[in-house]
Image (cartoon, rainbow, N blue to C red; front, side):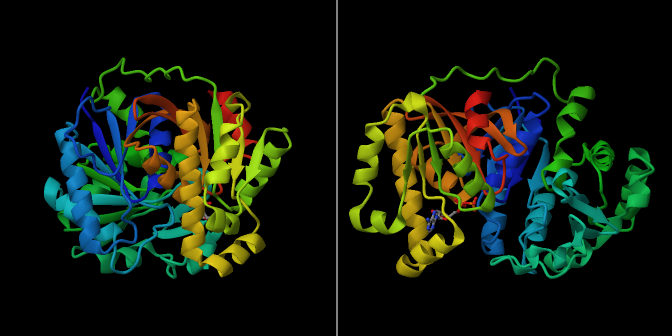
Length: 420
Ligand code: ADP
């Protein structure tokens, strides 16, 4: 198989989100954690490379993305997608613009589009302004983000300081006229030298129009949602050979473990709901882990019947988290918990667990690293943005569900186990 669309995502859960949306159409999608060391062997039609470059220095982000582009080109891709957050998380230094400009230069592309809209999740763009629900971006909680505070809602003015060439807008009035009108507008802007075009979208229909108008551009950029129509468009025009149906989910043994390191409001509710099922559970205390290590936790795990899908969780309310952070330091508390859950993952795998559900973006990063997983084949969605994935971990075939913070319904853990 050869790759038809190569995607580069600026963080891990963003990559899973994109991979899950692409896989909704039933086409095979693979997610690579970092740039693979080896040249592509058996690439999927849709390849997503997850980087961790959202807040890296711009030069480093550019270098990593160019290396990812080169790998994807070797996999056969001729079209590319640069995926960033639907709240356009970036600073005046980058990295959305610098990476887009570098990829355009490598691809010889004179123009690209910017469409972070994700209507299903309340992200809409109107007259170049990004909304979060009914609020402008700069009035949303994103204004206080610790790393990328978003204090302006105008995507053109956010983007212009990040790029060297002119920024423009294709607004909703054009998008409403359909794909041909949008294509003509983009061509006019291109003639006028506008290299970076923000495109309005408030609904999934708008995204379909945009994808139709732009799916032959060498590079598209945006949130995950504007990429969702691409597989069907490539199937329709023959870019993707028909019959490349979904890779059938491999059979995995039912033994399972659930590892929760997220402390989000939703994960707290999901843990509470799972506890009500009476499943075996162990709560991790960061202070206890700091003094006694992971020995007692792993000992407990070895006593469990993995067919009952035990839950190990550090998930706690904000007051308990603050308490642990005050005593251990924020970074150390996080790391101790992540390392303990990662150790549980490898121990559970060695004890026969083949289904591992993980809650928490950083936690998922630590777990996949410990399991030595570099490729995930995307299976069916459990909840929007959270698919089951299949991988090889030191010779064992595993199913992994990696859920970030607020994703999934309250019944997520049960849903995940039942869905497979
Ligand atoms: P989310 O996707 O919800 O942001 P993450 O896994 O990315 O979840 O981040 C949660 C962080 O909180 C991790 O670093 C985790 O180790 C840490 N953590 C989890 N439980 C606790 C706790 N009880 N006290 C302090 N830190 C915790």
